[in-house]
Image 1: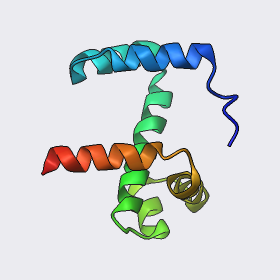
Image 2 (image 1 turned 90 degrees about the vertical axis):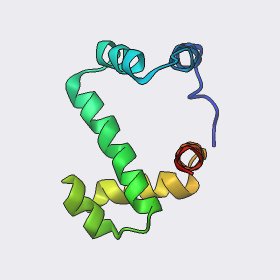
Image 3 (image 1 turned 135 degrees about the horizontal axis):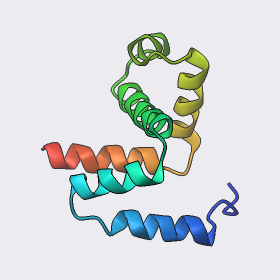
Length: 98
């Protein structure tokens, strides 16, 4: 995959996200940064990735989240063939739960 998407502006955003020490402050930042629709979309994408990682079928995920199976398929593709970000986050969360 091309690394052209890793712009200076995006790297600066990543650094800002990494600077937060608690959920409440991060949520406030995200609310200032994103529209409510964008936040809903991000939350839904993450929910879909988690459901897929737990073995839910595409149709079941689509029904639970209210998105199309096309959207579920797209997220599943990134889960399996993307940069590895979904998998890394899923592993980090699993460690915190154990």
